[in-house]
Length: 296
Image (cartoon, rainbow, N blue to C red; front, side, top):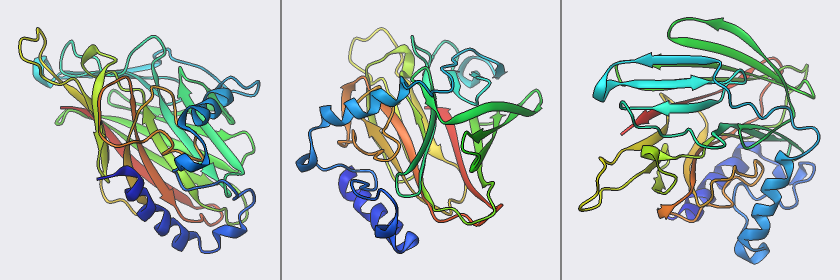
């Protein structure tokens, strides 16, 4: 499916959900994930992406493993590690097949609300902005629970990252709570990763409404066994969502997240994303997003 046309449907749903979106502050240029080529070339859009990650108010650029989880053996082997801020910067499955780790190890979460007036992200090795320090809430042999509040104290994101050996896969439950005493506008929430499937930066990438993936394709005479990494919505989703294959290894612009999506990609150093459009969140209530990472 053409990703731009798919996102038109998503945009319409968001418009209906948010009702008077034209009244949002700063709504001019907020295109629900797609900036058309008539509005500027892709390269100029990518320039917008890179600058925020280098901003003086970026919170952290942490890629060190704080929590490591291992299960299975050989074909059922899975090992991944989580940073203090809740980023998965290594994912190995099956044994010997790494799908994320690189010189920058970039993976994480982004949020855009209030008609693009407020934006927050943490992409591990690719930069972070507008998140405060993380708090460890709980840790067991199979899961870790981490909370983090935005620097403006509007939102708290609580992540529960758990090992599911029966898959095997890593499940991420994300609850975004409105910490204020008034309803907050909805917006975009996304999980993104610079996929390096099967120990290779060059992959084929694609996506559907509920998933996105990158893989190293089989080629006649190749000396490797091809594998891939899947990022997929988990369980019943109450929000509008779409998977994206992005034609760059750089993170998305959180308020125009579909900017670098051009459809099915081959032989590309790209990335993948699950994007959610969520409605207004009443005071002290939460929006929930669940995904999983699995090898295939």
